[in-house]
Image (cartoon, rainbow, N blue to C red):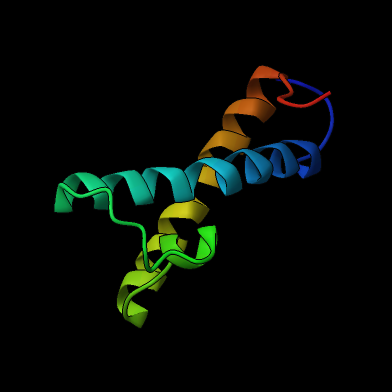
Length: 83
């Protein structure tokens, strides 16, 4: 186990998933629709979190789970993503 707290791993994991999660969400939607039409996507994050409130809450919940799991892995391995 590494020394230190959770702050650095949480920041690293949050930065990582803030970039990766919308890409995965958009890619999954494009595969589901079998279309490359992004005409309604004026903003990257707005496109990833569009839809009704239920879908937005599920997406934010998944994002939180990914951030916490990644931060835990980083914390217990003692690694950093960004120097």
